Amino acid sequence: MYIDLNSDLGENYGAWRMGDDKAMLGIVTSANVACGFHAGDPRSVLETLKEAAECGVTVGAHVAYPDLSGFGRREMNLSASELEADVIYQIGALAALAKAAGTTVSYVKPHGALYNTIARDERQAAAVIRALQVVNPELPLVCLAASQLIEQARDAGLRPVAEAFADRAYEPSGLLVSRREAGAVLHDPAEVAARMLTLVKEGTVTARDGSEVRLDAESICVHGDSDGAVQMAIAVREHLVGAGVSLRSFVGQR
Image 1: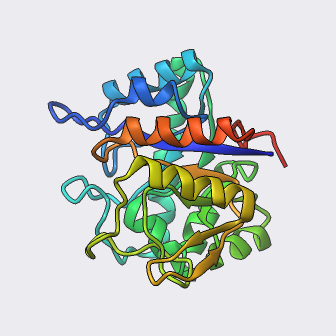
Image 2: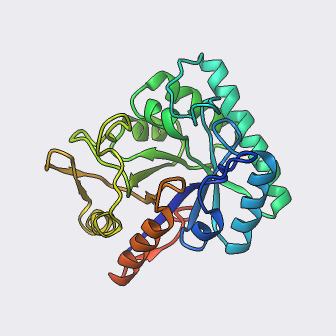
């Protein structure tokens, strides 16, 4: 039994520091690296990519809406052609930096509002899918588990990778509770670790109304920018490994 553990990294921007990338790279098996649209300046991103290469951590392009001031968490109604071009641009920029760092971009994971929008909006999802088809249709696309995007990506010939969130609360529908609502982000490492072990072994998480939501996930995300992120990731990793779960990237696995 195995699962991938990923985190959103490379989000430092100038004088603004976001999380502890070096520590997280010693814990996770995949790194979703910012591409400059929601966070991440070129020098900081390159440093994170070099550290990922040294740690043997798989790298993915964390593409987003062009929304630095909102950290990519504000929904945007972009045209299909604009969104497709934005995603192509971000993958290309990160691929060049990754090559300089001695690694490669091995998958794509949308960020924030873009991630949540394409989980339910087929038009914007199609634009992101087209971008991957143009750049490299072999790149897996990380999708919210139980979302319509999984089937849409599969029908387009891509490999969807279903993802669950360790530190986020769920609606009974399987969607994430909006960050605008109280209790959307979980903070107790022990609680989160126990939830993720249940997810891996039983394929369910408890929604905020107490119901059980079935999620078939290949990867678990622990956000790198939240308070106590490193402690949370350590707790999840130790709990899973202690229960006999292997941690490894989904890249190269089927």
